[in-house]
Image 1: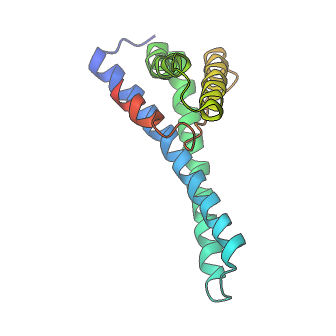
Image 2: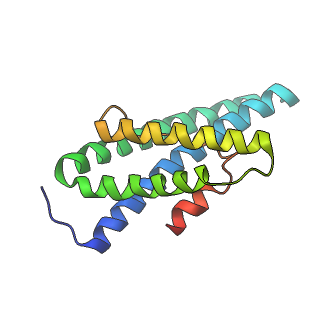
Length: 150
């Protein structure tokens, strides 16, 4: 197991989170283009460009997923503390979400359920059963900001 100083450890954990978030951003863009096509029926001239754009996003997403999976596997073997730090940020944010009080019952319930789901996914990462998890940015619109402040 490799020794890593605290600054390097945090930076590597931040890089994992940045990569995880980039994958989510790409998935969002793919969905956004799909919604746009469904709603607005692009012209024949626009369709090939959109198709190419989606194809490029899928390729980029696949590469970033491969990179994230490789880093999680590497750090799990060589320096699990990096994974622990990365996941602890998510655990901290989810724990705070679970302590939120009810303002809007439906939104409150959904945020709590999503936090519980994320904690379950974190456990799966710890066990080696998964290498990433997604965040519902619609209901947890403040999540990424909270992670970066942790």
